[in-house]
Amino acid sequence: MKYKTYKYSKTIRIWLLIGLIMLVGQVILGGITRLTGSGLSITKWDVITGVVPPLNETEWVQEFELYKETPQFHKINSTFTIQEFKFIYFWEYFHRLWVRALGFIFLIPFLFFVFTKKIDSYLMKRLGLVVFLTILTASAGWIMVKSGLVDRPWVNAYKLTIHFILAVLVIAAMVKTVADVYVFKSLKKIKSKRIVVGVLLLTFFQLIIAGLISGMRAGLYYPSWPSMNGEFIPSVLLDLKHWNWGNMINYDSYLFAPALMQFTHRMLAYIIVVCVLYMFFKMQKKVERTSKKWLNLTVILVLVQVTLGILTVINVKGKIPLFYGVSHQLVGLLFFMSLLFFYFSLRNKRI
Image (cartoon, rainbow, N blue to C red; front, top):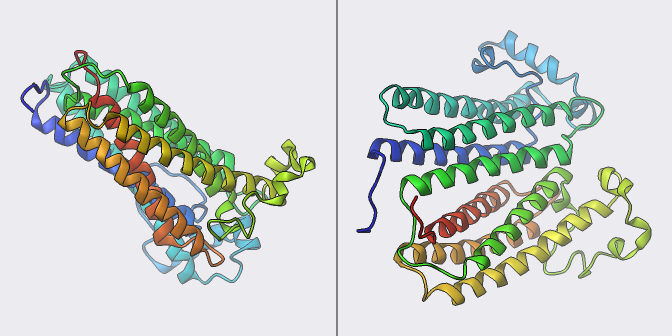
């Protein structure tokens, strides 16, 4: 639009956009790793030497022997052949390799831009926040993996959620940076931004619940819609004796926590859809062209997201269907990003 005056070069803008796309790809790879049960296949974290995968049969056998020492192998995958191990190893290796590639793609251009003085202090601070959050995410990821290498065959749901939410915060920080660099703003002051903030907060809380559902494998317990195995509210939630912290911690042994997470997830989804539609009809005639595009996109994505959520649930056959599960995660993330971009496009102050 005519009022845009880009402060940064086209090269920097494209570089940042590629970085954002790669961050989204990293989160989706994490989802694939989770749904394929691959996250515990690599039992160590070698930042340098871990770049090279096993290259011969001897090295594959060595890696497989390390995996055989894990609770996941003993309790779940004890019949695994080395070929089946290679499949889950691939996804975890690819997930970690993508992180390294992301760091490389960011670091080299970043140093070049700093050296050639094409990045000012503001952008350096924004990218510094992204890097800091990325380091936190990677650290939380390794802590999460270690939680599944002792006693339990799965990673801890709460640690997985922390890892996931930190990744979401990395993306949010990058979205803010991209919105600033691409000069997303409005020429007029919009008075209805509280609605957008409310939807953003609801969506962020929904993402937390989604992380817990993934960690607790709560999607497996109620593979039906619109009811939850014939009930609107699962009976386990109506009995007050189940409402204790012990049931929340021991989610592998008791149905209460998975039932609570899935019920909350469903109810929040309905509330968010209503709020987004209200936001759409309230604001569509008040916002400018760029903002209206983001607003339209949020409506499309939230409807697609709910549809994918329903398809995911009703297609559960002992495990979450990979295509629907990953698509549901991707569209949910894109919906959150579109809300952020919409919110930033409503600013009318100097960026």
